[in-house]
Length: 447
Image (tube, rainbow, N blue to C red):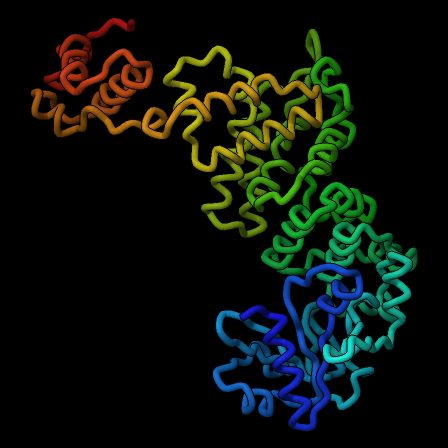
């Protein structure tokens, strides 16, 4: 079942029981804009126990706040009781709520006017108590009521306003913008997990460049990602980067992000984060060691934002390998094959493409790698090994550090096409590593 079908069923069943019920929030905004909503929410004057009674198998995701999650056949919809909020003590949630019978009271407590709309799904009639439809037509993000109060209630709204403006390509109403700028330091109180989710959405929902320009203009960038803010004004050699400084380059790259995964998006944002700390001028501007510095900085950023270890490792790998594409034409076959079989290599390749398009525009190495990927079947990129450690033991070698070097040498020869059978692999080992059998120094000459 799709969420829309479930949401319509919920509204219909609640109304049959005598309750008010409407689509609410982002789904109404998107429907009015002619967009496909990602999810659906329902607002009603039915209280949580009544909702749970009519939809067995549902669960409370915030009973104190009147929110019930209704599930059916793979779909889920949040159903919330009309409410007004009391004091916000922690900059995140109200200390208490009061359930209401009026949809107006529920609408005026929400964050932005474009998210305060309700809709009767049966007729398409829109209930607008906050002038949200006019703001959709004006393409404006405006806080409901006093923006200072709205952001003081829930500090994450500072980032949500930026996200909506970036994704929808809307302007932020001046009073709302100034309130974000004045109160940007409140973002420090928001949990890393919530900040991470909003930043990932800004990067992946469309409008990443616009989002980061707004983060910069409001002061939020300095609060959340000072390492990225440090890119501003860091000059680059014009022969490689005619577009300008590191910040300009990064913005141009973000502008080209389309349907990026969170890891690719973070790799795009942070791929040159090591440049500010490694800037120097010799015969030209240089950034010696910026890759290693970038990986170290990224590790700290990703840990600070509570990214999973799996995702962090991929982002760090994207940064660590993004400069290797310049060496592709000179790589040995074995080195190239190992490079091409990096996990999620398609993200490495796409980052390289975006990096080129945001600078000098040359895609020769990108096209070369694409051709190689088309030409090389998986069994040639990562063939089954001819030998294992057990084979070396059977040959009389003593287990030890030399094993990894022997096996790598055999794999190099296999990837280069120098050996094609297990017998040829054993002969290579006997010829190059005979003196290593007793665990002593190996004796071989590189070919």
